[in-house]
Image (cartoon, one colour):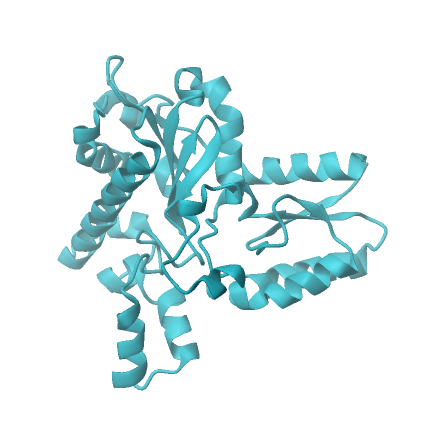
Length: 307
């Protein structure tokens, strides 16, 4: 049976699992566009095009927020007036398809930690951490949008909200100006002035490139502490996505910064790509496990259209 799965960045309050796309789903996603103005319109364009070209083939929306929707409430709240929470201004978390895949594959690749407390680092162009306890998402570094949390390729991660007000008031920037800045000109690119690609920065002798890398590691190590605190401890750390899977240097730097947590890096295993990159007697193990978001979408699509 044929079907098409679409990765949709935001499901809002409406969607906590994949759904077969119909006119009602399209209308709902159009209404949700303000939650992810740089992502959802593109997601919708693909969906509409696929429905027009192949109306007989079922389309399935797989949401990057869905895996996190059973977060504990403390992981959802902002300290804003309650009315905004009720309207949907809350911490959602993203990269959910990647983390869902990790929860699914951990019993096979790393059974000794699969039922325990695991911090997964999705280190790509977008960067986040997720606290998994027995395969359930407990917390994530991303919040209301994919701008939050750690340093990314072109996004700043966590930012004092008053910086945005300062840019508007003192730099006469519009909301669109700020949006373009925060989504496309910050992060590794902004700090280095060179590139948003970790490979370019690692190959550069420019001190700004080195500083951008060091800050990336610093913020990632802070995030590890926050995720460990959310679970009351940690049994294992997993690196995945482009940088996490392919940069031994970044993995080594993050693991060294996490020595206080009990991570003891096996240098040779790290250089060879794992899957286990910590020593045999490391109190907290470290792993490299490739993610497969496309497989999760395929599985969800097959399950829905089969029914």
